[in-house]
Length: 179
Image (tube, rainbow, N blue to C red; front, side, top):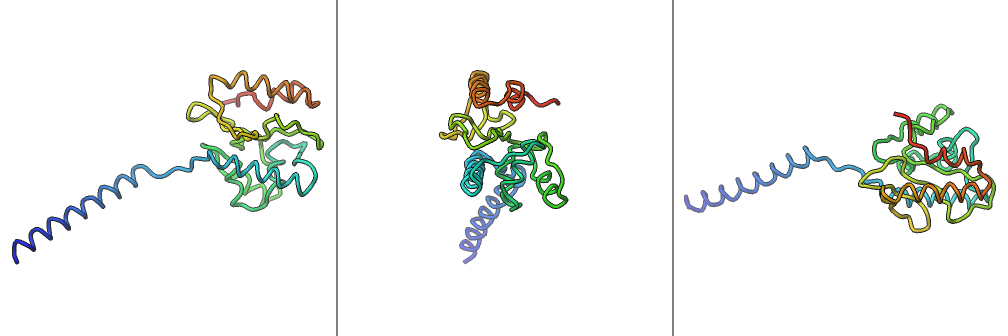
């Protein structure tokens, strides 16, 4: 009996040691929200708005306020953020009826007034590069690598200008944010 007790105790100690190691690892490496699939949901929310209203959301106060028009459900704001950004600006604006500054948005929503939006114009993209590129919400919901970003931006700016947006406004969507 004494030998069985020792073997059982050793097995139990091993199991406890494994669980302690797992707990320590999880504590040191908390899971982070990836956001790579959120842009697909955000694009769906934009499409739903278009279906319900006949046009995409638009605000002369900036794309942060246009995004706020899409949803008043606080749990949906996470779809319009990206790594390094918070939903707090949206939540505060919703609660207090204030403006959502563009610099508080982790994703850029490219506003095109009216109902005739070229399907090749990306509606939403990550403001900052991560993992070597940016997520976009075009038909393919693709990942544009950093090396391909300048050419992508030039094509998007040209499409926006063709859609009637001034070149200055079109370029402002893709301008790097001041630090």
